Length: 243
Image (tube, rainbow, N blue to C red; front, side, top):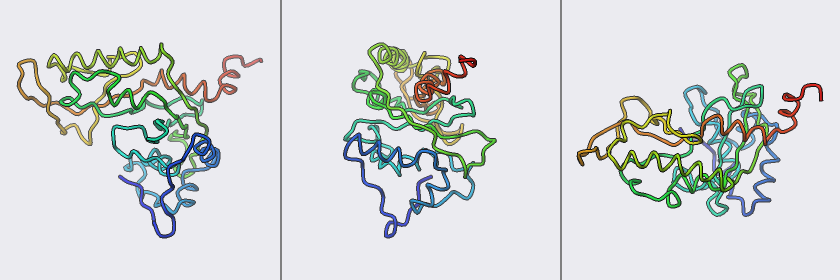
């Protein structure tokens, strides 16, 4: 689905010109509910929220001025920053793994990590935490925090290792065997509207075959560490309740 706006009354927010401008926009939405933000920007609340998969992420991207849409580029292209919305529970921890980008089983074969969409998407990331528990009605779920994360050399090496393991299987014609158990930081999972969706790949005999579309995801264990950095006081208190 896509965000629906009334351009004449509520023009789409322009891309932030600097990191400081982006941070100003982030501060302006902290603590606000999804419905409050939807109304503030003249957008349409989905009639069936559960069916509107991705609405929360699209809403935050729209408000902050993301420009990449569905391109294999960072959401804030000229700032080289990728936006990731994290649904969190009452413990300030992620509820699920986090989608990063599509895995093209035909065009990405043999591509170096540094030239990949995965690298461009993970080189500098802005995580925005939003309440996501089913116990909270979608309309009143709030934006709770944000954290700008740049992987250090060790973290980037771990992501590269996960990527290269997957791409080796693709190049050997075993794309259909890639599963979510692989990868320490990044895993590959099916990504499609239904289990009937299929995409081509080249099998071990060099012939075109078909399998389910797949995408790269951050494991929840990785984004759990991000949440601990985003909410240090909350997690410090949990780890040292008597402090």
